[in-house]
Image 1 (cartoon, one colour):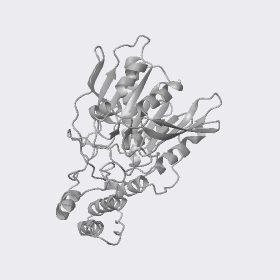
Image 2 (cartoon, one colour):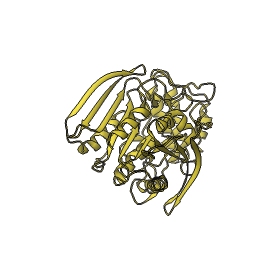
Image 3 (cartoon, helix red, strand yellow):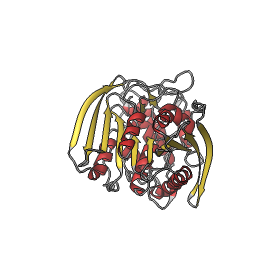
Image 4 (cartoon, helix red, strand yellow):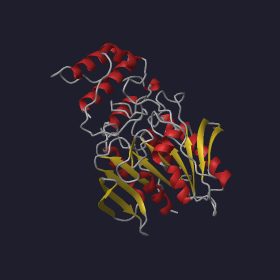
Length: 390
C-alpha cells in the first residue's frame, strides 16, 4: 500500500473531525498532486467527543465478487474512486468511502448436525450486547473451555465466525464460542472502543460488559475454572488484550491478532498514532498470570507490527524462562515464532510474525472479511495455546 496515501487520509479525517474541512481538502490535494509537499499535521480535537471510526478503513483494495476484501500485495497502490469534493463530504459526515471496507453482510457459518448456533443477548448494569453462541454437537466430557471472539471494525459475528473458522476448532476441542456483536450504535464503524479510557478498566464500559457476558455463559454451561479465553482481530484484538489485563481472575489467556497493547491510546489522535507504530507513554504490564499469544503480519499497513512487540513487552513478566525462537513455513508463508516459557516448559507468551501478511486473519477462510487464506492457521494455533495452559 502507498503509505503516503494512507497517512494523508488519516490526517484528512482528523482535520475534518476537528472542524477544518478546508485543511482536509488541502491534505487530499497534496497527496494526489505529483511532487506535492507532505500534508501538515492535523490539529488535535477534543478528547471527550473523540470517536475512532476507521480503525480498519485506510486503504482501497480490490474486492471479490461477493463484496469481500481480497488479500493483496503490500505494493498494490490504493485507488481513490471519488472526486475530491465527495471525499471531503464523506469524511465530514463520517461515512465509509466507496471502495473502502464497510460492514459486510454475511450468512451464518455452516453448522454441523447436532450443533447449535444461536442469537442471544446479555444485559447487565454496565450495558447490553447481543451475541452469537456456538455449542458443539458432541461434548461427552462437558465443555473444555469458553472462547470469547471479538470481531474487528466493519465486521459482525457471522462474518467473523466464517472468516476465522473458530467453530471448527470448537468441535475439535469441545469448546463453546461466544461472538459478541459490536454494532454501529456503539461505534460508527462497529469497532470495539479500545482507545477510550472508560472502556479500558475492569469496572466500566465494554470490559465490564464482556466479562459479565463471559461469566453468564460459563455459569450456564458449567465451564471449568481457568478455561475462559478471549481472542480478537484489530480493534477486537486490542479489546482482548484489555480483558486480559482488566480481568486476570476470569480470563486464563488471550489471543491478539493485528491488535494493540492495553493503554496504547486515550483518544482518537493517540489511537491513530499508536496504529502507525509511534511510541506511546508506558501503558503498564499485563496482569501476572495472563498468558498471551500474538499474531501480526509484516505487511500490515493498518496497525503497525511494532504493536506486536509492544504487546509482548507488556506481557513478558508472566514468563519465567528464557525466550526460544524458531522459524518455519505454514500455509505458504514463512513465519517466526518466539516463545517465553515458564519453568515447567509451558509457553506463557507466544509471538507469531508472519512474512507478507497484511491486516488480515492468518490462515482464514476467504468467505469472511479481513482474512488471508495463506499463512499459519491462527485459530488452530490460538486454540492449541489456550488448551496447553490448562
